[in-house]
Amino acid sequence: MKLEKERIEEEKKKAALEAVKHVKDGFVVGLGSGSTAAYAIKEIGKRIRQEEIRVLGIPTSYQAFLLAVQCGIPITTLEEHPKVDLTIDGADQIDRELNLIKGMGGALAREKIVAFASEKLIIVADESKKVEILGENNHPVPIEVLPFAAAILMHKIREYGGKPTLREGSGKVGPVITDNGNVIIDVDFGLIQSPAELENELKRFPGVVETGLFVGMADIVYIGKRSGVEELTRNRKVEKKN
Ligand code: 5RP
Image 1 (cartoon, helix red, strand yellow):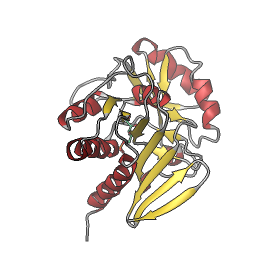
Image 2 (cartoon, protein in one colour):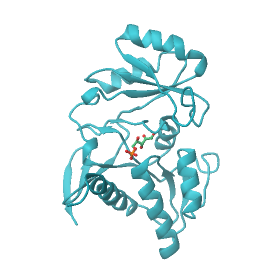
Image 3 (cartoon, rainbow, N blue to C red):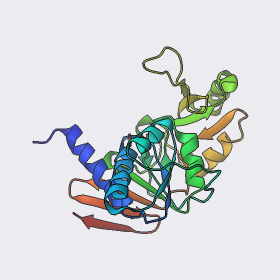
């Protein structure tokens, strides 16, 4: 019997491969962060080598940048290409409306900026990421904040009703420092009945750079499953068998 971990990796890969089918010759592609998006980056590299398609990548993190370089994907920037054809990224939670919590890899700010610049955002994930309501199982919303504002924001978020934790690094003492030189506060808000409202409220707090709530941004979600890949779009759901 396959190990659970191995099975999840296969599901992630299936979802990523399905998403990469959307990549066409000449595309500028946003390269997402995390372990599922990494499968997509590797597959784009493979298609560049095998099919000789011309693709430029815009990485959403240092991790994505390094992997893209390793995979032979030419890199570009939003300065050179402010219009991105497609972004493929992972997510931590996905609800029925395809609203997302992202940012457990700490790349949420650049991920959201690249998604915002994109014509289409495709999310790739394994089944464990699907939820009825964001915030289930006390899943926190990561919030990237200016270090100067971290203490006061923890205080204000507590007053607002959230349970904040400053994200600690591993392999280093002290907080995680993002690719933008900021810190991350993970906040348990309980069940999030209105992600749009919460997002709007949080963006009003001075010092908040970006939140991990991606509301109404995803166009398609591919969920890798044992039996194949499930496609979710905002209005319909299609099952694809392998
Ligand atoms: C990073 C992210 C990732 O896409 C998200 O955490 C999912 O990662 P994984 O595919 O490894 O589960 O938002 O900031």
